[in-house]
Length: 237
Image 1: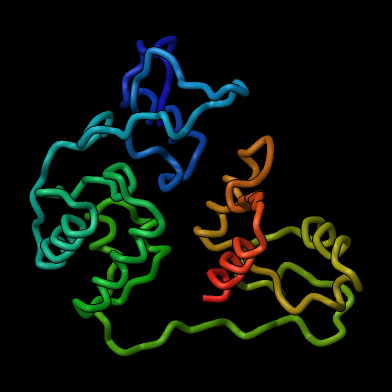
Image 2 (image 1 turned 180 degrees about the horizontal axis):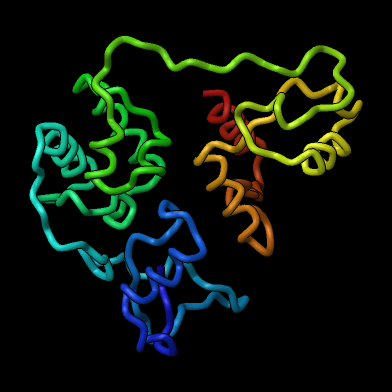
């Protein structure tokens, strides 16, 4: 996160504590960079390409180092060091505060699986510190995740909260959802919450006042026909 000199009196710890009260851990910036002023484009918008890359450990808040205490913590610390490119990780360090994000979380899960641990991406979002993740990680015993059966019968015209084992909604909230679905409740098979990655996508979509960060527009002007043929050939690859 970059901020201008007007906020220079704030330190990374204060900013992080403020944002933690309003955002999930995985949405809080990993580092903070102080600038005299934000670079602008000719149109007056922030020039993201001109923003300097954070230096190593710049604006990163780290807890007092406590070495891994158990074999599971040692394995996880080694995985985090590999994924985050760090020399060491303490048991109270937060994955996202160290620079982790959703894509790196998937890499951590992959490496945990290789070590015989049962892991899911959501575990990093709900248990972001190394100690909490170690406590949540279960040695793979070959068991499968039990998915509750669908409790909404076919043709059901009124869905009650008891029919939704994956989410907690009131009758009024369920009715508001059914009201915007073509066909109403009878056309709803199930209702469940967004996954953490989907929450992140929705957050960035709502954050943008113009456009969408996941939709990119590109306009190309060519003067010769063979240029178009080259583009079509490239797109088909």
